[in-house]
Amino acid sequence: VFCTFAKVYKIQQEMASLWAEILHRAPNSLLWIMGYKDGRDSYEPNIKKFFKKRGVDPDRIVFSSLFDKDVHLQAKSHANLLLDTHPYNGHMTVAEALWAGVPVVTFPG
Image 1 (cartoon, rainbow, N blue to C red):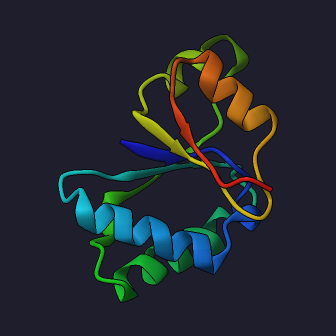
Image 2 (cartoon, rainbow, N blue to C red):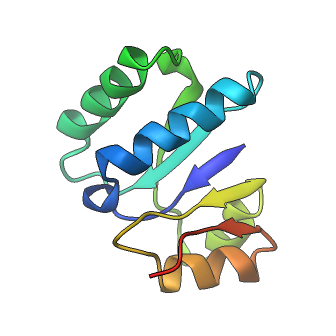
């Protein structure tokens, strides 16, 4: 389970294209995107369409809302690897993933 817990506006096309390549190389994997409910009706179909155009089954892109504070880190611990965004890198998002025991792949800068 690859994941990104960044705000959706931080997901740039160049980065998402790299993630699509990662999903191609790991055919039994999925990408979990945790986000806010606001605007989800518009961004979820667009993100699925983006990945479908790059040959990734849209069912492999899974969305969830944020979790309550008492289970927030526990929920995140179910991911295997956090894919950080670039050029808008994670801050608290990355720290929380590490606290939950999830390794992170990021770009410097």
